[in-house]
Length: 152
Image 1 (cartoon, rainbow, N blue to C red):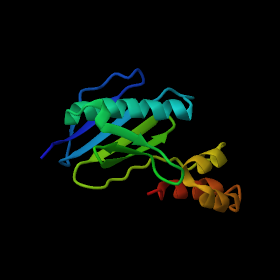
Image 2: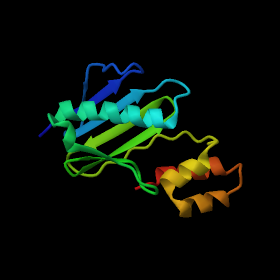
Image 3: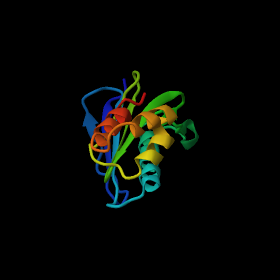
């Protein structure tokens, strides 16, 4: 059984020494992003860090790894058919791999999201976006966080 591991990348893309993780077959990848980084930059960064970690951890070629993103679904990384979730929050991104089955991760601070309509459209789908539009402005940050964390 593959031992668990935790890989952390700093804001310059440098890898700290990988640490063991208490669950066999589980890989956690985290990376620090520079303050004010655009969402696309954070997305590209965690994907690059995850690709590097998975390639080395599982000794796989780069073409065995595919990133998938579709509105209404959590971003996924397919490793020869194995799904992996990815999550972002200001200044930090997280990905998880579980060789033994499904795993979910989410990072979300409850706060107003200025571009919530764009994010809802891109990731949560039109039905959730419509429900969020009907929520009062004061309650929308909590409703948005709940909707975000319910992605499957």
